Image 1 (cartoon, helix red, strand yellow):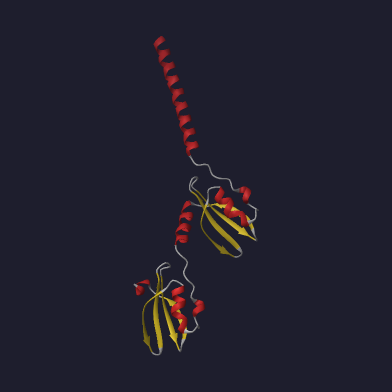
Image 2 (cartoon, one colour):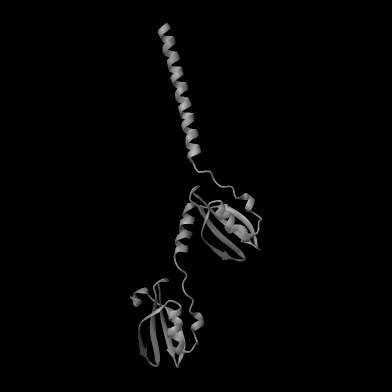
Length: 185
């Protein structure tokens, strides 16, 4: 009987020790998880301060867009693994909402792609200025030909990965269109 009581006490002590270990392990796991940064105090503040305040809290701007009078900016915090979207309208931060990590990754990829050079303003200009204007915008002439009174030149911009065809007729730029990248290489 005495041995049974000792064995039972040993089992209880061991069970208590195990429970304590499990509790400690859970506590360690919780403290190891990054703590989310609270951003609620930023709602309503002037949008002009958003960039500096987010940066001071460890966030990096990874992209954004505008629609219907609202600007949406996507922010990523590496240390907390937190991705949020901040909406600003009428000069104020309207809301800051958590979004999925994949959205931050998608925005970062999009931001890494350089914006295409807009060439619409060149249609109608004198063809004599075409070469210098295209070169000033980062393009280089990679070829050309003439057909039925129209001269076609092909231009490549390596930094934006743009390949365009420019048609000139009667001394003026008539048409500019994007063409398959392979035509420029």
